[in-house]
Structure formats: structure tokens, C-alpha cells
Length: 273
Image (cartoon, rainbow, N blue to C red; front, top):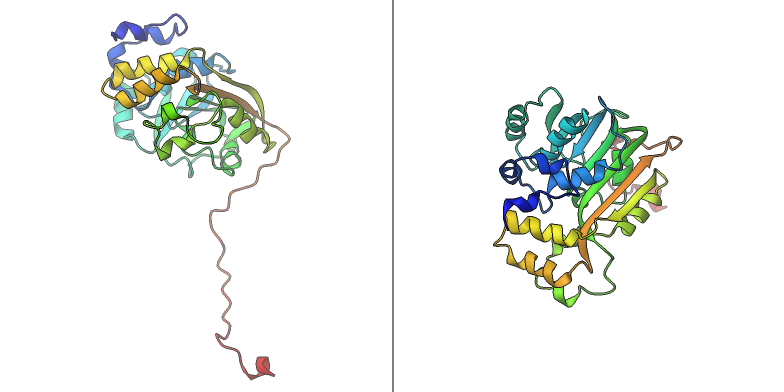
């Protein structure tokens, strides 16, 4: 596959970026610019908004958001070097609007209601399946702010065991992959957000395959799994929700006050009567 495959009519904004720059910033199994452009098409992005790019990898999505929409982006990741991301941001000429942060998604250093929107590209699956996580994250959104995720997922949940054609590729960590409908139910039942979009990318499995042929052509197990599956189960998933303004979110418990009261270890004679 040639780099011309990274130029697609369905992603006109992404197609203007240098393929070598995109490939040098690889951090996952999905093209971060494609996923971000797909999300942005259904987001209310306005100049000057504060955006949390959660699990940003090498910050390509953050740079893209600032350049294309004029938003301020906090490019937050745990695994990738914040120093490398700063250099990439500076080289892109956007250090006035993209701010690299090293942080764990479960311990984010931001004030309640700080962000107008939170996005996560091909990352949310690694921590967002926790039943309690949405309450913790949604506190950082302004009431009415949007939460949006996109990346690898399932077209439908498995019924029973792993399909035979996926068994050779499937590893235990892939159980974090879910369908758009699963994510809809996972978020909707909390009452914290209202779902605006929960869908899949047309021909997502082909784009997933083409991306891997570009960045990891030796990853035959994954490429062959996609080719055998042909979109029956594998593809790209997008979910967008809005924080409900009337919901009062609980503050997370981060420590328990010291309330030690010394008591006798053993029963005394009074207890034995």
C-alpha cells in the first residue's frame, strides 16, 4: 500500500497532512486524524473552547483539533513522553494552544467543569469500561459539554465464544472492544449523559486494514483477521454524548479520614459473663 491511501475524499482535512508526519506519530491501531475528523463532524466545536484530548498518544489529534478548529487542547497521556509531545507541538507551531500533560486517566489534574468537551481517540476502551469511570470523568465537563470517543470496536457483541475466524488473533486484552450499542447502554444507564450519536464508520474494517498495511505490514495476524472478518464484527465505533445539566455528580473518594480509636484486643471478664 502506498501513502496515497492516506488521502481519502471522506477525510478532506486529514488528507492535507504529510503522510510521513502522520506515520512518525503513530500511537495506536487507528489513524488519529481520520478518527478525530470523523468525531469533529458531529461536535459543537467553536474557537477558543477548552478541550481535553484524553489518551492523546503522540498528540496528533490535539494538533489537528487546534489547527482546524481553533480550540485550546490539553493533550493528556500516560504512556507517551510528554517531552516528545511538547517538541512535536512546538514544531507544528501550535504551542500557544496545545498543552501536553502527563497524567493517568483515573487521576486527572483538572478542575470540575473546566472543559467544554472531552474527546478520546482509540484510547477510552482501556479505562472507560469501568462502571464507575463516567461519573469521575464527567465532573470535568461543563454542564451541557460533550464527551466523544472513536476508535477500534465491534460491529456487534459476540454471542457466546469468540468467532472461529478471530481466535488466532484474539488475545485477552481485546475483551475491552465493544459495540456502539454496548457503549450507548453503558453510558445511558447512568443518567449522567444523553447520547447524541452511537454508530460505526462505513467500511471501517477496510480503513483499519489499510492503516495497518501502512504502519505495521508485518502484523499479519491482525491484517488477516480483518480480511477474514470483512466487517462482520470488527470496525471503528463512534459515540458522542452530552453531560446532563441537572445531574449532581458525586465527588470521588480519594482518601478516608483517620478515625482510629484504640480498643482492647481481647475480651475482658465483663464480656465473658
